[in-house]
Length: 417
Image 1 (cartoon, rainbow, N blue to C red):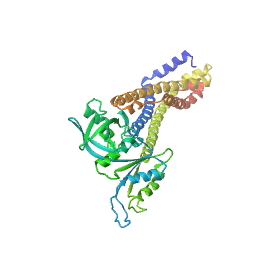
Image 2 (image 1 turned 30 degrees about the vertical axis):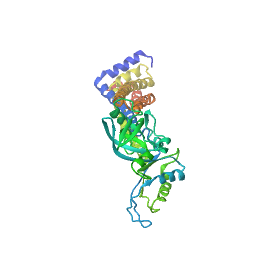
Image 3 (image 1 turned 60 degrees about the vertical axis):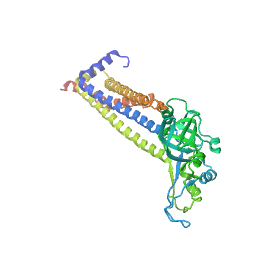
Image 4 (image 1 turned 90 degrees about the vertical axis):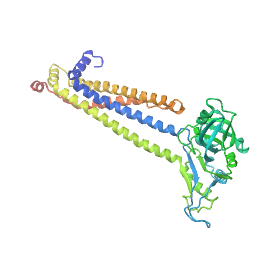
């Protein structure tokens, strides 16, 4: 039947006999495949957009900050304010080998100046392992290193926005900028990868060695907060109790006062996002399948009507020697063609819309490297899978009408009005 030209002409003529009905049925299939493909591609793209917000940020990390005690201890009343110190940093590094990085930080608002240009941003005191947490892109020069820390060097790394405003396209490396009446030599320019920030966006910040920040602002051994990164296959949640014990041992905090130390587990945020997208995936599947079923029901209805209208024709065919199998193949082939053509058109339409969406978002964010990998598009295998699913279900929907046509007896068909 595949190469029977007369059979194909008959299928075309049958479907064209009632153009409005055929069009509406085909549109139902078209819209069902398009909706399913758009939802799946859109869900993939939205997940990609969300992941871009966290690109470069260590997922297995946490932020630790001090708070107020909620229980009295060693003569101190509850409500005592306390500060994290460099001793806490050393104790965590020594006592918890499961941590790959413990990075102290301090942050404050400042105005950075160069020549007659000014930029209001954030000054952050950091250590070299800050890169393990945020992993910024080094656009020029280098990052803060261990030598800068040991020598309390007055050097800085500036964010890309700071560099653009202050130097207006000139090379800033080796030049001096002023922040809070202190001059720092620029050794690097960085750009933030993720949308998550610690103490302010890196693009709008001036980063200086933590040791230099403590001296410049008379911080002593205090730090504003800590960022930690766990080693591979180690969960921050499994280390929380140990972290609490190590920090409480260095401060007048009751052993049972877990609210005095605030720990924000970034991995929990990632897990919550994955849970949300799992729910979205289920919703997409439900809506898409609903559209699919609606289209398939339409196929079944039109094939049933076609069989009813052609009862005499099928009776005559049986009378002149057509086998029941041949009648059934005729109906199923008409169902398959209608489903395949409309379904393929729906997939092509969805691919076009998804492609335009991908192009538009990439173009609008051309200066952000992460968006180059953003893709709302369907994979070829998924597109074929959706089409084949519609084809199989469309033929299944035509099976009942085909069985009815196969059972038509010539004498009954001739008496049908």
